[in-house]
Length: 299
Image (tube, rainbow, N blue to C red):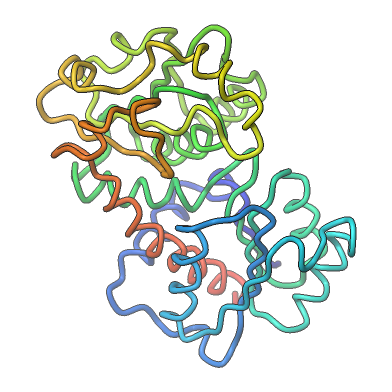
């Protein structure tokens, strides 16, 4: 049976650990030698495109990237026909889309593995890169604490699933006007992860080993930017909030960042920031995911 990676909970804990081990290999098997990977970008990207294309290259393959306007998902061709077409040429398919339902339809119709490069519900490769970074910085993750501060979005869901499955205590601080969606809470709980929810950041970061942020206004929400800045006032991660966490806390951000909105420039550009290590690990995460998917497809 063809396996896909659309969200972290598509993996068991042991599978997640195996994928991480594959991502950490310095000289991975060139399982894509002479083969291609079709990459569909309905949403523009910097890190995702470069990290995934380089991951394919490192595995010996050829990445073929197309922008959303070139394929026209559900305007020029259906998601299903795009999946069937790309399956004719490629060993795997990656999609970065707005609606999660589109990548679910691609996976249902494809005859090769499909990996979610981002959707409005999930960002699994980012979460794997985050785990790689946390392991490098903290060592073992069991019993450690990570606090996400800000908008409870797709990044939070994947982060909570990945870190919680590996034994971390997971907290989120978000304003009452932007609560964690019930469906997200249910999905995280179904995976066995206990998510602690706070409505102010100071209590949420106390004793945390890592603090995580994402932008308050994601792509597609630009018309809400002014209101969101008002709603999230008081949730900026600054040096005072780091001090409230403790002397050894590290800062993570999936990027792009809006300095002096969700995070101060002093924090993201400061000594506790590990955002560039995260960015580097995006490539390793993509490589590990492709290795895992293609090994699974061969079983």
